Image 1 (cartoon, rainbow, N blue to C red):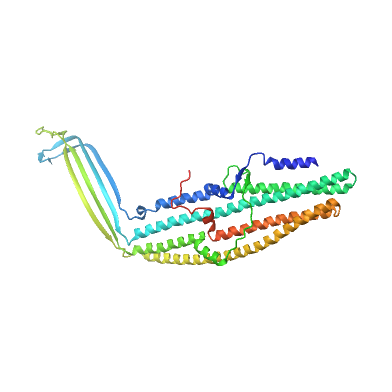
Image 2: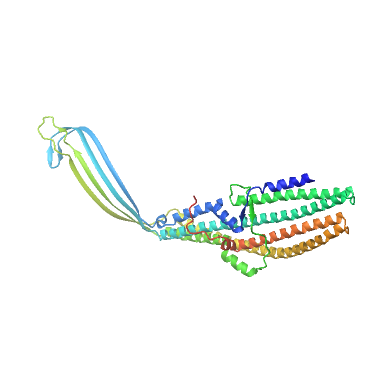
Length: 467
């Protein structure tokens, strides 16, 4: 039997060989919010939406371009009489004529008016930015719910492990006590075999619970994006019964004003309303300005010109001409007919807006149902916890009394084993009831938007860049 004891200690102690760090619920939340992949992705999306939220993206600012064009050529040709620089040249043969021109041009294009479409587009970009931030809040809320439940699930399995440890200690003490009696001749073989079997059963249960506890810690490490998923912690927060109560009316009021999913769909609906205005802006005429300045410098080299009879002198230097051109033109465009595309786009956007309103009502109905179910589940679980807590207290008292009766011989091993198992069942049921109550509380907080307000800051307008 000492072999089994050493084996259990080896298995349990193997996970405790390294020094463990303390981990509170707030620490786990902070780590998860910093490392979670989905949150980091949404932060990047917020940055993109913030970059797009500008007047330049909306199209209200002019576009300015600078173009530079140059032309170079060299050619040989025969010509008749030509006129250059106020002089007349007879027919000649031109060798290695070089021509060079440089033409820089500055152009400005500006849509001055298009039914306030640019202002509407800027409003839509602001709404898309807000929607991106709200998406981030939804991801944060989901992450908070997952990390809180994972942390308390690890606490639950740790407390269950302690209960199985208590059961194992009792079985070991009873086995050693019976073995001593057997050596003194006051116990028979069947007694010691029964206690040994109970001890081995409790040893197996303890080992299985140890595995369950380690799996809960692995799940917690995965949510915290820990590189070492087998890392162990000293969990400093405990499952505690809270006496606070909730009123359904106040919960509903808070849900309609703070629920992250509802806030997100409100923003999405406002984007649909803006889309209707944006499509209607296409019914108005468009006024555009096109202005610019163009400068040209042209060089024509005739210094290599030759006449068949040689009766004239070549120009000493190339001829240079310079020109500058300014312009400013306005264009007023009316869309008289394009196959009804604008009207169809308006009608379709109005229908999409109506669909959005239906989705808002649908979500409100679903959230109301979820809240009522969660609230009733919370109340029921409070009652169930009270029953299980009372049962655990009674089982503890009964076990303490039965231990003395067993040692005095008033009850036998079978009766004591039943009481021992009843105690273990009552304790584990109490722990599970307390976890279920915590699960219901977190669900209520998720529905009413309380998770973010209590455990995390709202997503900033410009999210920090991840490195």
